[in-house]
Image (cartoon, rainbow, N blue to C red; front, side):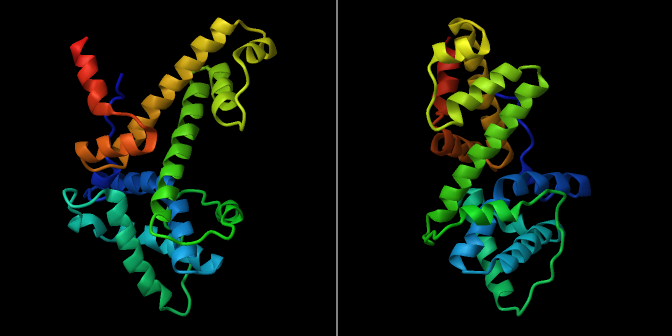
Length: 237
């Protein structure tokens, strides 16, 4: 029922091993870079070029400094602490006349597509968290589709796309007719795909949370999964 526990990227950020730190930054970047960019554009009203520069510089800051040594998981969720660090960093960067662009991570940051979706959005304190939740869900979906395709479950991936990534979900019969399979096949394959998504989603949250309590809170808030209740039910059977 529960995925194998991956190593927390937050722990990796403080590792003495450079490869481990780089892995931690990669995972954090995958979830946070669009959130950070949108936050800089909205809250600080940075022009796109400057927001790009500051986003890159902030990730470089993660690599070069022990930024999270002072992070106390008992007082705040990691995403709250990271936003606080970002705000402090951005205030300093915002005072500079220009920022030198520096590539901090091996990750394709498609700023243009994010900018296209950032239309007349009003900054408010909850924007960062909403963006974060949306990005976590998107990363989990992307990882799920990759995992299904890698395991020769292309039809399972296609069913997941049609039922969860389109504006209107089709009927089971319509999909069965279109794919030339039975409704039972559609039902079973979609169940497998959804189970894979749950596994991937929980694994992702394990990577970007710092404690068991934070993991449980984020699983509930982002995906509506009560991991504590699920564990209790599983142990009772």
